[in-house]
Image (tube, rainbow, N blue to C red; front, top):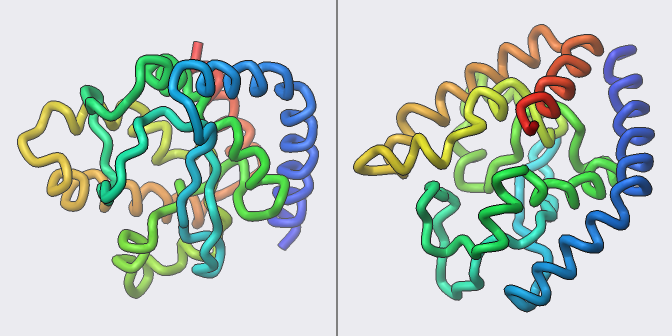
Length: 198
């Protein structure tokens, strides 16, 4: 598809330029994490990518390292978030290493956020069409729930609320994106992401 070809070309160019321009800021963030929180600098995790292929997502680590912790749900007042991690998460700087995932073809600038295997397994029937897309750093569902951690902190059962309310709505929004995606809409979502980060 013409759109998909240009989408990949834009991803490649933007990721390469972004990594070059942000090399020094990213190095400073890595240094701050190392000095204040120790190693590892990066958080990596298995996620489900295009066509169901598993890849390792990369983020700056913003939480303490706890063996045996399996929850993929984070709330705003989560005690595992480090002091420097709160600042990094506030400005979404933890997402910057995902430009490497984009460069490698595992992610796109715009698309559904990549699910952990357990959640991706819930996609059945028509919903599995989402797997034809590369997961994205930003997108309609990501922007709609940019304050997701705050929302989850206000409910009694964050995991249940996520599973029964937020996750289904994200799937709906992402399907709508799949059915009506365009180059101009991708540019809009990228612009919106930067404007909301100010």
